[in-house]
Length: 253
Image (cartoon, rainbow, N blue to C red):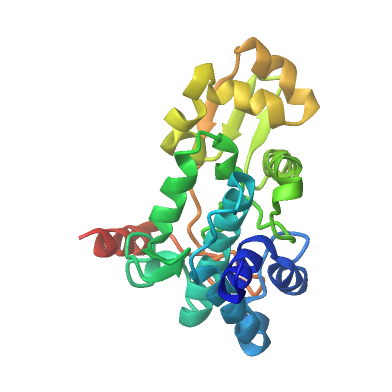
């Protein structure tokens, strides 16, 4: 393997720089210190993303590609927010999801393109790992995903997401659950290979909620998605309503 391929292989497999940044700027509550990151962490992030931009060698395994793609999505979202910070929501930026302004694995891609590629793998757990900088997104993990621990990490993040009432809440006494709108938007992803949303929830929800979910006798409600920024300083805390819909429409047409 020549030197260029070695560098590309390292970029696809070594995510220690991303872990260091996450440990430094993401709190235990999954809120991000964008202000501090913009002041002193952009160079390291840019260098990490630049490494992912070169073509990944064919020898890169499927698990390595999957981990790298999840990390790339999350890192690119943070990079985009930092470029526009302070901003109340990712929706207040220019065409954040559909424009192919990023370069990963030698290809020009959009955030939607990376997400769709991961969705095609048929693993609904990706929805517990991808974070688009919104308050209702699953928790941004404070370490990079790696091929060696990928299943363990994805399971753990799914459980953390479902266990926190900020995102999902279960009431066994009333046989009700209020869950993320993600389960509504991407319902078909959870129904592949005989799966259901309820089966996914039963596998990863807190133990007290599992019997009602396994029995299928639960009323599911989907929470309104909070698109305000997942910012430690509270920027975007009140974002929503007319401002949200105006910016969604502005970015779709």
